[in-house]
Length: 323
Ligand code: A3P
Image (tube, rainbow, N blue to C red):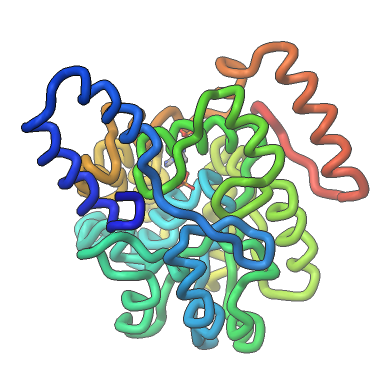
């Protein structure tokens, strides 16, 4: 079952439920808990088997100079940044930004979902330019054509503890990523970088260094939350766009957490429940810097900080864990 496609295997299980005794159902629940996508590393980075099997195609993706790429570690505020960029590109026209879901508006270049969903590569190859795309790839795995073509890249980073909490809940609700296990287990998995897209520490540091050589606007989730106007203005300058004060205010409003949470084209509720179950944890969960304090025990926090100092030693990159 693990090897058949995700949607298919859930259907197999539902069929089996009908004919089963309660005792057998208990065993089945154990099976279901372990039902998760297969993973396979690419150059030391954990990916889904589909991504790994299609790695050559992903690596050879052809970027063009007017492409814009939004790059992040998972859960750093990707969707939020995508919405801001789309609103800028559409001069604050809310209806135009609701033309399709986030997934369809901005191809997620390395992502290969279960059928019938198109892969990021397919969406990107069909999209007329100028394209805006998304990636979670660590810097050394970015298709080299992005560097060669000098495409603009917006990188958004979020502090490790809030990223970890957000990734934990996301892994509980999204059946396309591995089950996180218990909270205690997931802290260790995250610290070891054995999650999809690898180590948070290497990701944020790698992109931080890359910005010295490439056209990368490096933003922080905490700054965006503290002063969205200031950060949107940075994006405008980077994209060489000018908008009126009125449009700017409209963008700030429509990309706020509360408004995006209600927007079906930005909150991922149009994915089937068999893939994303928002009753377990909504995709638009809290959107608050410092939420990690509700999860880490004192001991977990101290141990996390000790390990963090070691992993981030020597880097000039600093984060705020609350605002
Ligand atoms: P939480 O789980 O902490 O709430 P990504 O898009 O990279 O997957 O990131 C998702 C995280 O960004 C979630 O964090 C989500 O709630 C948060 N987020 C999405 N839109 C946001 C917004 N407009 N303002 C603040 N946070 C937002």
